[in-house]
Amino acid sequence: MSARTERWYRAVWRWHFYAGLLCVPFVLWLSVTGGIYLFKPQIESVLYAPYRHVASGGAPMLSPDAIAARAVEAVPGSVLHKYVLPEAADDAVQVLVGSGAKDTRVWVHPQTGEVLYKVAEEGRLMRVVSRLHGELLAGSRGSALVEAAACWTVVMLITGLFLWWPRQTAGRLGGVFWPRLRMGSSVFWRDIHAVTGLWISVGALFLIASGLPWAMAWGDYFREVRQITGTAEGRQDWSAGSAADARERAAADAGTRAMMSEHAEHRGMTMVHMAPEPAALDAVVRRAEGLGFVAPVEVSPPTTHGAPWQVRSQAPNRPKRDSAEVAGDGSLIGVQRFADRHWIDRAVSYGVAIHEGAWRGLANQLVNLAVLLGLVTLSLSSVVLWWRRRPTGMLGAPSSLAPLRHSWALVALVVMLAVLMPLFGASLALAVAAEWALKRAAPRFGGWMGWRGTKALRARP
Image (tube, rainbow, N blue to C red; front, side, top):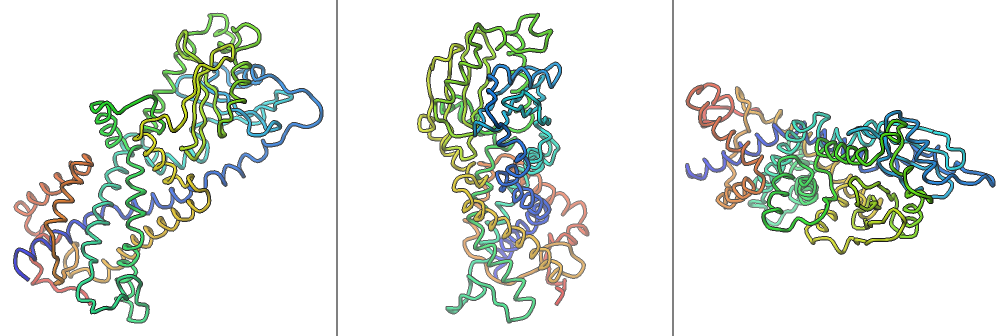
């Protein structure tokens, strides 16, 4: 192998090894939390089963206005944020009330007005799992860590495919498309790692790409590009992170309170109680029930004078989400269907729905779960491979003499990724600068990391 080819091959090994070193703990964490979140519908169906089909007999149903008032009274100092249309007429009604950025979800009996259960919205199990998955419960800093790990996972997968590329297979597909199980433990672990990486790479890359619009740095980058190109239209239908969501809730709360009279605010009641009969919420809910939106459907009060009420489907399968604007007297102002949105918003919504396993129900969930289990297998097998093959006296990637062709294409691809994913580009530049500096300032450390030749180092058997 020429010196130039060896240099590029060692560079690819280093990129792959460093990416794995950074990513393995995060990949395991994201796979486990993501696997749990995939089954959110089934988990919440069990958790909130006691609040379905609670109405019985011939007792009359309370009006939405009365139900909202009971929810507000259950959380002192709160105002109405969202009224959720019950999926069945005899279900408890869910009402989101709150103060500032803090929302509380309250389940109210539709006949008696009894508060059956209330919980802080951010304290709900699946909301916690979501924040563990996307932010490590550490806000923007956690989001940045997860985003950096996701970007480096892309590099790990791409460099892994370059290293896997079949060489001198002589027509044999074992070890390429399926693992060879009877050739000893060394071949077994190598094949499990390589073959698993082959089969799950496309799915894993899609899951990472479809999750980036939620990320802190890439999401901001994406929104800025859309503003510059004039492709940003209307309200973004996916989260921009817990901090941005909190700011949005606080702004909406402030707007609602600003529209209340001093007397209504003193009693902790919302603007709907100031509306003429029939109460605005009652009229808006009646209109919303006739729109046929996919559940769950949320009704939100206006936050500025003269603004309409908002009716939005929050269907897990985002391509089924529609929204409407309704006046306080219940008259329909306008409807926006999913098909009316900008094509970029529709594309992102499809990606998010598939990412969350909501696009095609159980089949989507199981496919995603298979990819996540593949990522766990890939991560654990990489640790086993490194431990078995690590060079004596080194931390770095084990040496290999297999030739690597078309390394220029890999370099070009990594540079392109650095442009498309600014956080990755910044961390890559930092890693390259740190390697260059430490090679010169601490040659022994560089040797231990595998930053110089490995001919004098003996690999473990």
